[in-house]
Length: 328
Image 1 (cartoon, rainbow, N blue to C red):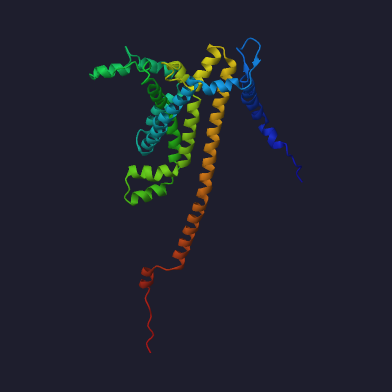
Image 2 (image 1 turned 60 degrees about the vertical axis):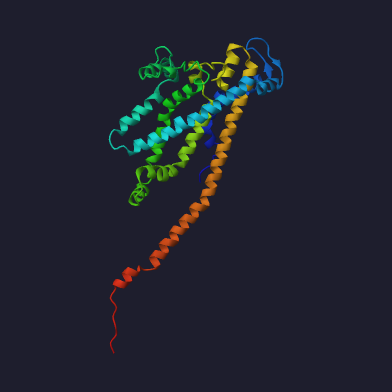
């Protein structure tokens, strides 16, 4: 008889829990404590209660930073997730050169984001940048801009850079999911006369719905956590048109020495991201629970159809069986 060891599972996960506690929980607790104080990081902290939170909710720049990050997320859902899905469809349908195509698209993901930001800062340079140079070569001189210095184009320019980087990441996720689509389903659609474009959008994409939901959640939560690309390219400018919560709180903590106020903004941002994650999880669970009865009924229908098919002989087969007439 084996001895009962209730502590064994916890001992296996203890190292991971210890690392998680020191790397996440302890800093979060200290951040929450600092958010209730007025502290510059050097002198003695003064307890101010929820004054920092009241100030954060009334801060116009902090509010604008959330508007900017929401716009950024909406645009990146298109240039990252949707474009990645289309690229995965192209990669799954290409018979020759698919590997090199995937490597070329995925290469920007492997580059450090600071390197990407510096590279695109040269591309967007108004004097010798590739974008304005191409427009001048095409005779579109009026279309040239200071792309990262114009309030109307700076945020969109950053979104395009983000799409250039992460489209390959989502392409890899979708490509792996598309490889798991049963070939029988695709072949049945082809036999019915469906085109490849229709098969992709009407057959393959609905089957990988779970992967698409995960990609959307990663894109949304990752958008709120963005920092390095914005910090290197524009640092929130011009005139806070590309300011997002992470760049604003870092500026408040390290540039102006408002550690308490920056900690309050960090707590608010963490609460928003966690809430979005919980809502997405609840929606997915509800969707899975709603799909279970339909899947069960579909299986029962299939079984009943199979039983009826076996129980009832084909009329064509019955007609082909010779009958014997008794002659009296």
